[in-house]
Length: 330
Image (cartoon, rainbow, N blue to C red):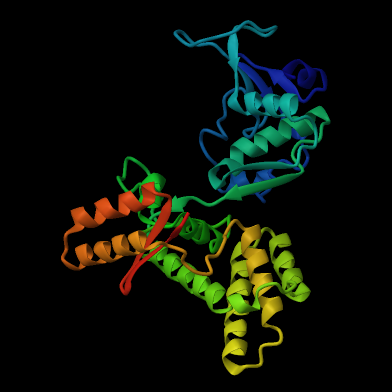
């Protein structure tokens, strides 16, 4: 690849490596939504816009000549190693081919890494990714990025021991993928409560099952998803449909409820959220739930945790609310 870029006058050799010339990429900065001049006027990243012997401050390394003690490989230009932008674009084009559908990563990879991957493909005259998605970070309730150094990391497996997995999925769905995801007990608890409301809706409207999903609701849902995967808008539509269906059920003007209920079920299942329309637990499981509530009321948390784990090992999802414990099959 590097030899091809040099042959196309898109790359050049210096005394410390081989660099891509961004002059060969007229739309360089596309993913960053900034022109090179704008990035340079803003100061830029010192590691990105170093001076050295480059023709332009934004030119970046395709191959770096070796330094003492570093691993290296032979090349026509001298012993060295590939730059990580080059490693990734070569793997993508080799394994996925030109014009693959989707390239994803964290927001911090948009520039320079993903831009420099894309730039190499453009300079080669190749089509790279058709779509790019850059997600926000997982942060704590104060908006601080989770990291081991800060000690604010929440382990997903620990969350799943305590909460219904659907609650974490709902938390993600209610946050746009480009926005930071705030993870903490308060907002997960709110998702658990929202799920309880949806399960309650499924149970109280069970007699309306069998309808055909309202096509207008489905169309609005698809429009939200087609709008840069706007899952918060899609979920807002689901909750609004539940609200309207509950009002219709209570008022007796329920002709549209079967279609609304079917739409809610269909849309949630398309997002990986299945609703429970009622419990089918036997007497022994119900008794364990009561024992768990009694242990919690007595602040005997060791016993409560032991019962919860026992139920989970039996394949049940255990949800705790102020008003009591809800147990359902996983």
